[in-house]
Image (cartoon, rainbow, N blue to C red; front, top):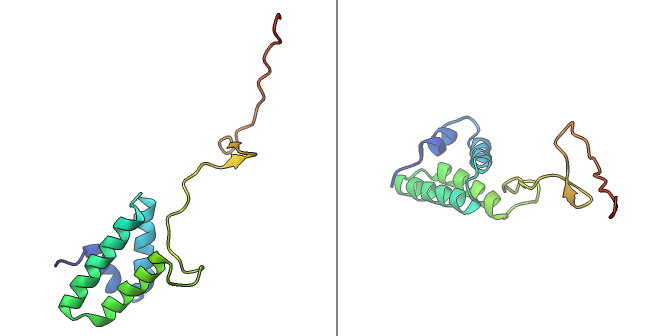
Length: 109
């Protein structure tokens, strides 16, 4: 089993867990679904186990815990909501934009 290059780079950094968290966030920002991110980390975990890299496997498993929520709420990793901002249940205007009200003529006018 081959280890993903981006995961290997994060593991070889001075702060592997921090950099693995950043990698997961980057993947989410690209639109990668949480199940795919978790699968990537699971593949890495298996490759690290086969290679006997226990400390690196531990770092990957820590981040997998953050991905599935086996951690405090402040450590949980999940995609940012992609919904558009709303005002009173309606889509908000673009930043700097203005809300306008369209007045339609009354019947018979």
